[in-house]
Image (cartoon, rainbow, N blue to C red; front, side, top):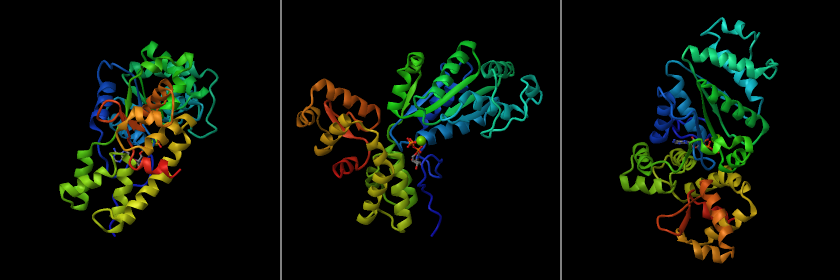
Length: 344
Ligand SMILES: Nc1ncnc2c1ncn2[C@@H]1O[C@H](COP(=O)(O)OP(=O)(O)OP(=O)(O)O)[C@@H](O)[C@H]1O
Ligand SMILES: [Mg+2]
């Protein structure tokens, strides 16, 4: 059996990518422009929609460009300290003297990394130097949530904007985690930061890819593509299973295995993250036909219309339901999500 080109891993850039050209270019172009219109982008989307992969691929494009350094920060730690250590490490070769100038010794990225007494002042010093050398820093941060460390970091980033330091931030997060972060008084500027909601992958591109890999005709490939609804994780899993079976198209056994993978590795987590009220709404949607009338769904719970709208809006922003093709209709964005919900 040849090497399977599809990937089962979350978070790692897969061999087979359906490019998200519009989103990628928008971010790369604005960060690399001479007069950037923004210094921050936030990628939002359901679990498995491809946030980490897009963030990684953008960081690779940008760091290849002259005059850029890239540091990836882990939102679980002491972010300013990590930022300092990582910039120092990356710029050490560029400016051998920089180390001495900011008087930091033996920089490593281990957990025992040195703590700085006045980290903000040292970072200011360092960023001022990078600015003079026309060097820009791209900071990526995956799965941001509302924690003290993240708030300290974003506070510092606001200060960087005021000082016009060449610092650019690309972060990803789940809608609800970002909402709780930006509801802090000190973080309201995040509400204005441009957000990109990762919707489905292009159906045409998914179809083309399946056509190429499995030698299908356009109709067969399009049927297979519909089974993924453009869900990034679904695209990989379905492709992987079909390839692995040596067949060209999914049969019932493959389809069952595909659904099990979606349910266990993705939907289970998504379900856990829903509140009781959101689950009620999701259950009601699942018991109706796709693209059902919202009013019918609401009356089946029953729930008052303001509350229902609030839940519906949150589920939409979480990337779980789309507003449907006609006014007043809803459906799930993720493939076989209704089936999963009904099995709960
Ligand atoms: N553009 C893409 N083309 C093809 N497959 C993709 C693409 N982006 C992501 N994937 C696949 O989708 C899966 C999920 O991607 P990723 O880990 O980036 O999602 P995520 O949104 O970060 O999820 P989570 O919220 O759980 O961290 C992976 O298997 C990855 O290979
Ligand atoms: Mg991720």
